[in-house]
Image (tube, rainbow, N blue to C red; front, side, top):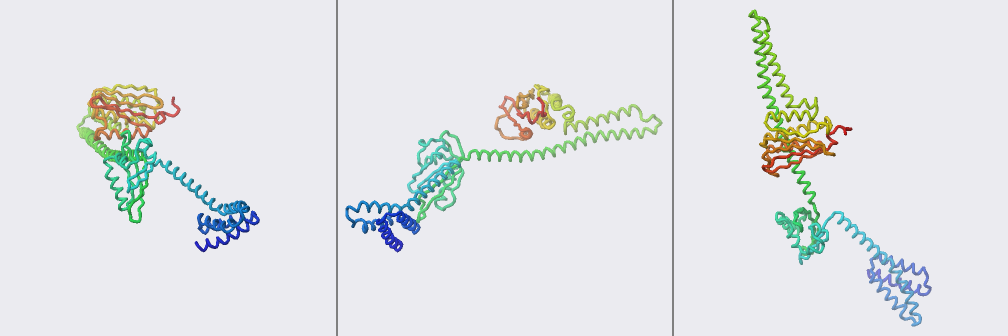
Length: 453
């Protein structure tokens, strides 16, 4: 450094002397080039100032008083050209720094993060305005005190946060935690916090900076997804169980009903065969009547089993007649009156939605029979543009909202799945002793024949 500065001092003195003689543009250009080389050689502004002061002592101060003003003005112009590369470099640095700060602020605001800057030695801390807004405060309301934030941490998460912080400061483990805070309004919200400490030569942390990000919506989505997956798992297991129970029921009906009737029919046919050798007319009218009656009973049994598996009337006559028939059978079987408010001409239901809507009504009525203890049910199927509303309301014992899920909740899960397939939803309204109301809200675009209405 000293060698380079010494060489530059001699060059500067020589070139300044030449410029003071003729004050040419070439001399100024040469000063600029010297300044560029000095900057590249990592010489600083103080070095340039010392170099110029030495040149003034040699060239300007010994001059006559009358020449000194002109020489001082010319040497100042020369020195300014020498400093020009340094000034450009400083301006460039400032511009780059401003751009960097702008990008940082954009990144912070884009991430919606709240910044904090903490001195572990003095416990001084800075919370950015957005940090305070996340906690529900205006900038001047929340003090810049670490305890102000610690007091807002949910007690269930406090130890986890403090242990993570201690582990980072003492063992340099990563500080990356999610925890709940109570905002100014008392609302519980989730935040994600990350931070990084700085340590001195003695491994003592002297500064820690970080941010918090509001992740409440993400947490709610994760919880809803977890609950949905759990419901789907339980529903899938229930469907498998129902399938096995349905297979067992069909097997019992085939064995106990059709099997017995076929055995009786076989025995009747065998008696006819044995009776044919007694010289009597074969077959007798009475014998044929009995066989015809057995065949009719077989046909009824087959139709009953087929109707349980899939209501044929749904395909033959449509959704509303099938639901009317279902309500009539429900009333006859359970002695529960069904009051219907259905306009058969209000909606022209398409074939794709029929089985799902039929099963929703069927499952709703089944739940009434099993759990409600009701004597009356109101069944509405109405048009309320842009929706079709299906409502089943009973006058039974009702249930506590948000209560524990029992086996009967699988029926509700199944109905919700069917409604979701049609782009709709199921809503429940119930209180102990106040009955149970189930409402399916389905978009007309999913249930109505295209071009209808």
